[in-house]
Image 1 (cartoon, helix red, strand yellow):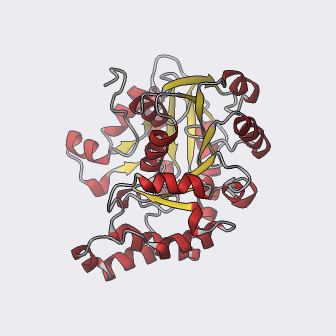
Image 2: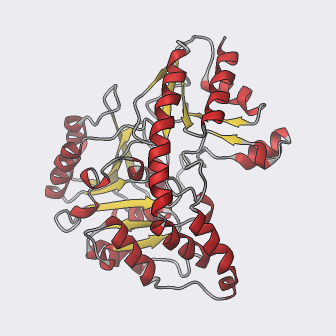
Length: 365
């Protein structure tokens, strides 16, 4: 095994904080994981309660009804364009195994740390190219790194950890460039649903035109159900067939299928989430910036990337001090392209956001 393969830390370790500081789980305020703080859709929770006894059967190995619901939700695709997985991350791992084995992957940085890890696991060589200082795509630099051994380009849109929404024309330019060179593009759209007019920014509707594109989404972030572990990928029929051919039996549990179907139908929840997150995101960004000690980067998602302007204090130190109070933030020092002065916070309720800001003020001053 490659000695560089290591377990990577992520946000949302509420269990670790609970054990370390002896804090009750329900009293932990998690700003570290970019999960909808409203929690799962009420209709999804009710469906789980109502049909919980289905766990006495093996899960449906071909949940065509869920695929149909996803097609209706996304629009412009058919069931033959959809593959299901145990979260979007499992699908990314599966895709890399099929299409990037012992080749070269290209990763704009900073970006989701698992792209590097999955590359190493499939014996691929990850190559890194820096984003612009404002976290926009450096199209020319990315093109310049693509060669005959490049097999896979990762693009997270909206971008994590900055929250920036990439220009659709630039993404299409890169996809066209890659298509001519037999390079696949994984478009991680886990945060796309927080954006207004999703259809204007997603490439999910262009998979017939772009046979090299694989779009991944999950029910973890927007729908607030990370514990249920379910995601889906969208691609041309050939890609989907190859991914389903190596799917592990029963990789999606029955309750996940039930919850996902109801979540997609809960329009009231979907509209409420979009409206509330957009309102509270701007208020939280303003409060953080008003401290004069923090730089807040523009975001189209449910999280904000923040840079500490005061010298002598790191994100890791802030994280530890806040953890003692039962507050979790995401130290971004482990992201390639960022240093120990960056952290990320998720938009939560107005009351909790105010508590976070006041706690940060106290620690920074």
